[in-house]
Image 1: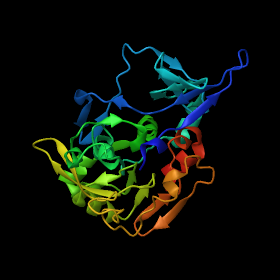
Image 2: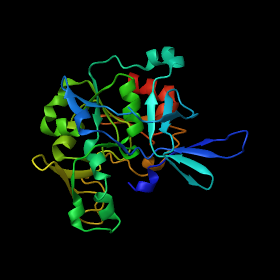
Image 3: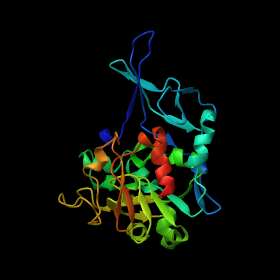
Image 4: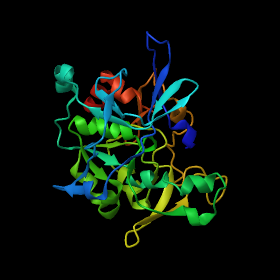
Amino acid sequence: MAINFKIFLILIIPITIGLIFLAQYYSNITIKESNLELSKNFFNFNIETKNTDLIELPMNSIFKISGVRGEYIIDENLQKYTRLFFELNDDNHSLYNQLMNTDEKTIVIFPIFTAAAYNEPGFYNFYKGECNEECLTIPIKSILRTEIGGNSAQVLKLLNYKFLSDIEIDKNPKILKDFDKVILLHNEYVTQKEFDAITSHPNVIYLYPNALYAKIDVNYEENTITLIRGHNYPEQSISNGFDWEFENTDPYEYDKDCDNWEFYNIDNGKMLNCYPESQIFEDPKLLKTLKEL
């Protein structure tokens, strides 16, 4: 996935001064290592906002969305915020009651391997020819970013969904058998064991296109991942590293508007036909459908 497709824009038109402001989410929110933990066997990610000067953004959303005051760039009179934070809105409690997850047998897989892949220097520097194969072995470092479905991760956590990470699945693939429904975010980079565990589960919701796209290996002693196959590596002709028959990157990954979103059936679940990084916080129908699938 090209990095420049990972940004979405929200336009705000101030009446008094006629300037156009744009809130933009790069999702480069670092999650402190102390906040990456298994709590009662679940993966927990906490976002630190203490001592952060947040400003609420007037965006089309069923949640409150804040950016960090002063953390933006100006491009042709457009104000681009570099981080977004989500909270429940007190005015929408009745709506949240309809959307809140109450099923303990539903689990979301946090794409910690994909988060590492998008860090720099890393895989994408190699793809752009900026470094050699030394960039294909990189440390596992979780950053909540739009490339992994960072908006959805925050929203689903607010709605009481529980998480496991790629690491838990890779170390114990049988754990998915404990759940009736598995929701993937943008889990683009996975191991063979994780791929097998996910594709053998009978009810997986592929919330993002381009999931299960490239095969990696993990070295837990050194806390690194290494690209093995996929994303035009080691041969240019190789796209999906698993030769997966349900590969759906093109064209769905590039539909960021999701105006005509729908879930369609595959052998072991359902796939969404667009990239819902902005739709997920705007559209209660999408969240209600996700809950009921």
